[in-house]
Length: 305
Image (tube, rainbow, N blue to C red; front, top):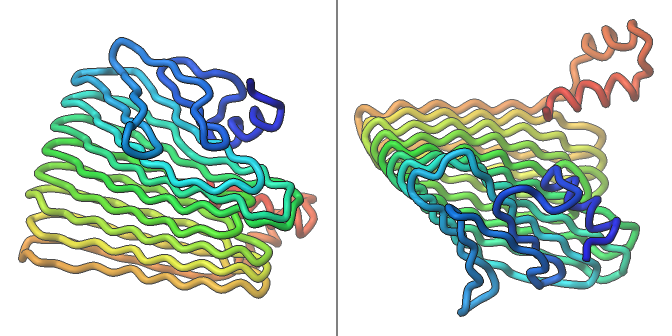
């Protein structure tokens, strides 16, 4: 049974407030509470450790899978999910974790996701993290995502952390084979004394593989952010890393883009920028009648969109 709090969490992390269409598995407080499979998408509970296997048949088109996790105060868990995306399938997977913590005890979710994107398949993976609650206990999320994209496959990742996560270490590892393509969009907001670390490593091991990683973040108050984006070219390939951050108040941001070429035809580029909100943007919006706070909020909303 989904409570109003549960529905709010699901709305924030998966853009749903009731049971979605298509295949889904909803996990609440360490237990699977709702599941639905389709003719082309099966979801099976692991027998050796907490988690599920999601099997998407080859040539599956225009279907999606929702696998959100919601957690209450005082609970800590580690979950292992494996995704098999069959040859020439084209699917969207919506994951994410929402924590509601009103207690003085920490609530923690560690999610280890492994993806196999088979030949010619295309996957869009959306992962949103959100925390709420007035308790002194921390809301902690540590996702690890491991992806292998076979020949002619495409993996598109949208990773979002906008509110309420006190501590996080995000590890993402991707291997790209011949003609495989990766597109990553990461957005993050930290405030108060929150701490966030994001580590993304992309191995371009196949001929004509391509990767684009764009990370945008806002650090406010006394929060701290660390980004380590690493791209490694082992064949004729193309890769681009871009990391942009807005820093405010007494926050700290460290951005470490790294590129390494092991092949003479690897073309790799990295960019990193950290700075404050441009004064001319504030002045322009304030001239239209917005207060300084409203203007700041509008600029940050657009930056993280």
